[in-house]
Length: 340
Image (cartoon, rainbow, N blue to C red):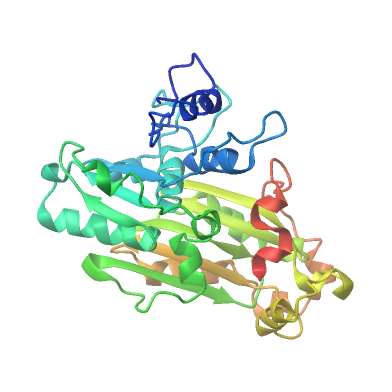
């Protein structure tokens, strides 16, 4: 089933195909701009308009990466409209944003066209893909030739593992045994207990081009938004700042999780006097300039002379950052539950 022919709804096609007993498996080739995880969620849960198809389970999510163009696409700054890939004129996503998302949600990543890169370049790309998605199986290939048995009936898909399997989350959880991986691939987490000044952080966001940086994501604390979690996501050249709910320090204890283990996890991130408020951002890159990234982030933090003024004064700081409540669903990050 190919999803971009525009003639029939993909879920209708899958349901019709699943009714044919001759089909042991259905392979769905998604349109370039479609988010595979969205398709998988629908097949599992359905939506308000239609229930999930009967007798269908998601077996494997596969992403194909062009070895000859991947790094160029990540650095290009092109959006989907420029590439003729957007759903409509309001689809303002960047190519790099879509590529990273498709890699992070994959069970299997096919690194194709490896005949067009050197052995060292192929090794670098495979190592980078493994850091972006440590749970994915990576297959190198030429001309898209992959044995069907490597892709079908692998029973690889697990919605919870897929949703929580991205490399940036593994970095935040200290799951990587070594921050410096093979072939120049590395990752690190920036952590600090001081808030960002809104003006200086906005200036950084408007011009944050760091050699070798491929992916960044995590939680930010902005002084003028003292009680609110910011989620900063950077994929190549695509940068997005969104709302992630309230810090637990700004949440009544009665609204905290009732599970004792979750409460203990909250307290592990607790430091007086500001509780769980913090900067905690994961960075993943290839020959990445870690020192430059740290220096630029530290320049955004409040100075000692600004810290002493306290939260009441911070609220009045000029704040040119975009309204992160717009087009943001806190449930995407679980509100402050995402911090547990």
